[in-house]
Amino acid sequence: MSHLLDELISVTGFALLALAGVAWLAARPHARGPRRWLAGVVLFYCAASIRAVPWILSRPLVSGFHHFSGSDVTPDMTMIVVLGSGSFTVHGAEERMGVFDVSGAARVLEAAYIYRLIGSPWILSSGGTSGGFMTHPSALTMRNGLVQLGVPVERILLEASSQTTRDEAVLIAPMLRAMHVTRIVLVTSDLHMRRSIGTFRAVGLDPVPAIAENPMKNQSRLKSFIPTPEGLEFTSGVVHEYVGLMYYAARGWLRF
Image 1 (cartoon, rainbow, N blue to C red):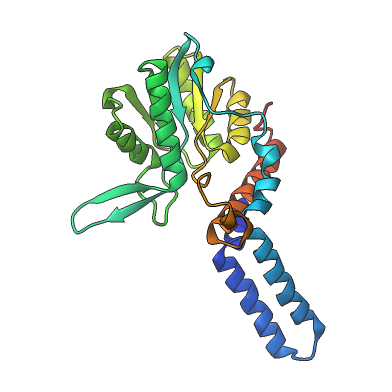
Image 2: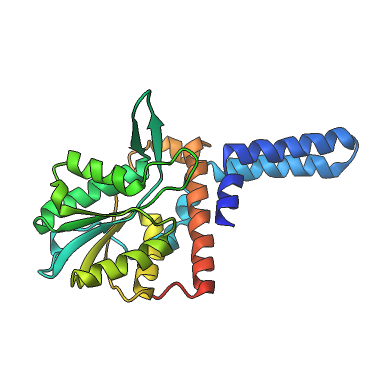
C-alpha cells in the first residue's frame, strides 16, 4: 500500500488525478464536483511540494536521533550495517553498472566515515534488487562506493537478497550471530531510522543508530518555501515511513 501512495504523491500521480478531474469536468461541465476536485488536487500538491510542510510532519520520525560521533564509539562495536536505498542499473553495450540515488550515496558516505572513526570494523552492505530500473543489487552498488572511499573490499560483507527493511533484519540477524557480533552501528537515512531500529530490535538486535546526512540540508532556504519536485519527493518519503510504521506495527515486526 505504501508503494501505491508513493506513486500517488508524485508528478505522475498529480497528472493522473488532474486528468481524471478534466475528464469529469468534460463529462459534466456545469457541475461543481469536478471543479472542487481539481482545486483540491492543485492545493494538495502545492502544499505537498513545499519542503517546509513535510519537514514539519517528519519531526516525530527523526526526533531523538543524532549524527554519530567519537563519543558514541564503544570497544564492542565490531560491525557497521548500512541499509540499502534505491539505486539504478545503467546498461551499456556490453556491461552494466549500479548508480546510487542521493539517499544511498549519503548512507555510503556515513558508513565510510564511521569505518574510519571506529577503526576498521567489518561493514555489512545490505539490499537486493527491486525490479524495474534496479537490476543490480543495492548491496553491490554500495560496496563499490565504499571501496572507492577507501574501505578495503575484504572488510565488506554482503546481504544482497532482501527486498524490504523486514527482510534485511531477518537475514542479517543470523549472519551476525554466526560471527558472534553483539554490537552494531546501523546506518540509514533519518526518516528511515525509527522503523529500522524497531525492526532490528524485533529480531533480537539492539543497534546503535547512525543517521546519514540529509542530502537536502544544503538546499537554499527560499526553496524550502516554494513548490519543488524535491519537496514532493520529501512528502512521499514521509508518508511512506508513516504507513510503513503502521503496517510493521500491525504485523508485530517492531519493538521499541
